[in-house]
Amino acid sequence: MANGILPIRSRPTRRRLLTGAAGAGLALIASPAVLRHAAAQSWGKGDPFSLGVASGAPRSDGFVLWTRLAPQPSSSDPETPAGMSGGNVTIGYEIATDDAMTKVVRRGGAVAEAVFGYSVHLDVAGLKPGRPYWYRFKSGDATSRVGRAVTLPAPGAALGKLRFGFVSCSDYEHGYFSAYRHLTDEHPEFVLFLGDYIYETIEENRPIVRRHSDGIEAATLPTYRNRYAQYRLDQDLQRLHAEVPALVTWDDHEVQNDYADRWSEYFDDPAQFLLRRAAAYQAFYEHMPVRPVLSRPNGPLMRVYDRFTFGGLIEISMIDGRQYRSREACYGPPNKGGGHLESNASCPERLDPSRTMLGFDQEAWLFSALAHSKAQWNVIAQDVLMAQYREKQKDFEGFWTDDWDGYPACRSRLLKRISDTKVSNPVVVGGDIHSFFANDLRVDFDDPASPIVAAEFVGTSISSYGPPYDLLAQTLSENPHVHFFESRRRGYVCVDLQRTQMQVRMRVVSDAHDPNAEISTLKIFAVENGRPGVVEA
Ligand code: FE
Ligand code: CA
Image (cartoon, rainbow, N blue to C red; front, side, top):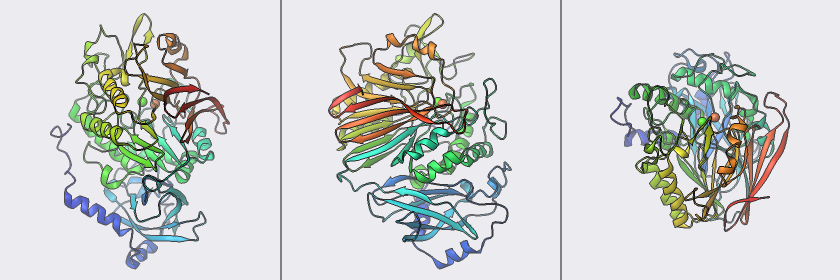
């Protein structure tokens, strides 16, 4: 779709993919020459592992291990990203079966790629299924912190229970990341990042606890890189990544507020905006433990949607709700860029069945998964509120066009597909709206007789300010499928899954402006096996 608009950097040819695979394969061989090279370097100018480590994209025989060489993490000189210069750097790595790193089962070399900000995406294979591993990187006189990774259980393996968390919306200026710290302390098997991992913006109106260091809106590769580096220097976030494997997708603020595909909130020229998107996607890639072959960005294109299956217990589809979506309904100057409220009368375009949130390729990919999944639980993890929410501002009643209410035909297709396939125990999780929601999803939200086909849980923000509670709460009675709404608290969601039940705990920090904030449970919900929708625990 975006092809042809821009002179896109060379597409990944088969040769390039093979080269990439060979680069990853290199890691499997402990080449003495490689290790000598890694041992030779002295890092006098700073710790190259200042941004920590991360693991993600697990498979039953491996995972992706991430780091990015950043001896001067806050350097914004575009010529020397994070203090690095020159060509690719090969560093050493070790994988062990214990957290003290005494039982090393794999060591070798991994490539920090100069064109991707000296980031490492080490795609490891050939390990045992369904178990934790620990890893670290080495380069010259520097050693990274130890990280924890897990392999998925063997396909179809019996798995009785699983704990995971999901998080979204961590504006560094709006608050501290205590929520990340407390989630780490709950020792989930993995964490889903559902978007707004960084904010490109600079807060100009509301109180802040700390400043985005460069003081400018991120819009270029150096400024997006700088933003990610600053977030990763936060010790609560860095420890979460070291201890808990991540599955990731994005929302809008990784690029720009409320963008849709190539359409900017500010009516920028789409070709220009795609250049910005390319920079933003590249910086995302450089900082996330995603599969190098699947997700390596190609100009403004980057595949982030992916699927993970945990034995027979749960299948999680990580969805991209931004890159392929149709332009916002009734988009146009002077004030219809990004999300706005529209009624059926004011904006018939919103209802157009040709509009898509997912893009038709991703939709087909997801629809196929729903038909073929053999998992007991099936989670669709994505960026924005899926349930309809009839909302009022002043005297105008309508629907917010930046979430699924801007794409109701696509939502109906998805919910009907869930219903038609009878996929086992579907649950949707999301973020973006800086509020907790527990919702029943119906194919037709306006018809109380329309069957409930799935439950939806939305996590509040880690730190970003929530929308005005009273404004949204005034129309709660017009949205009877909403069991719970709360926008005044910051936190995350922790899920305890068994074959017969999913328990959903909404966790809140005492005060996001307090770096030592405490944690408590606001509300607990459940989904029972074989019964679609939310149960109040
Ligand atoms: Fe957000
Ligand atoms: Ca958002």
